[in-house]
Image (tube, rainbow, N blue to C red):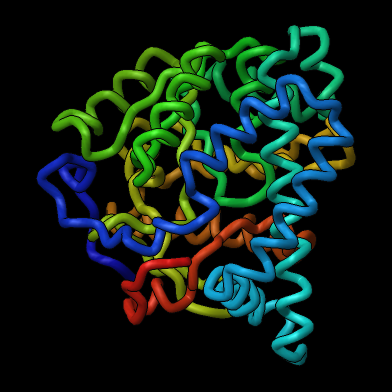
Length: 326
């Protein structure tokens, strides 16, 4: 079990974060900007066609990214050859491109159009209201899986629930600025980790106001890590969501959004996770984080091509990779 976390882990005074591996061709300001502009006027199918060509070129030319994707999938397909895994990597790249295109197109959707984008059961829709009725807020947690970005469209334009996203600043300043502008356009607040000394207080304030705070959990941040079992391997997940749940009594609600087809998505809330106040803090945080890892693993095993880690995930977990991606 990892050492207990403290709210100061979120502040700018924390450990330096190894982030050189996030500087890769898929995190490029020019590409993101061109895609953003293109989908505004191109027909959907034309955008998909360009995306297919672009991802094939990336798959062919970005050797490190292709190999990283293949290695990340190895625990799921241990008997497959490197060539077979790399073919799966191409499918992952194409799924990611389609998700980005659909997200950017969804930004123009009216509330009525937005409702048509999502398939969600009445019970799952009501779950958000039921949890908010406890007046503790919700910590919405997910991983780099499926179209997590389009979740802000669902929350703001379909459920009409205030949303705050806790995010690391993008390495590329242009991408970071554009993502913030997109969230602002949707009416979504952003808290950038390590940009403020009171990040933890900001999160607790939103929860005390019965708001929804969204966080990604499947990448650790400096010492903010909790060791879990994930895909039959040891991985370090972010511990802050469970810690905030412990301190605020807000439930963690895993939520996964998977693409069904062009411009169509299924919203799948998981089982709410209530962080125990009866256990010691470190044990409670670990138990809740493992509960999320188990739910994420179930989704990744069902649709591995929707798990978007474009760097050597397992090597970074082990601390054996600090390089610069292509």
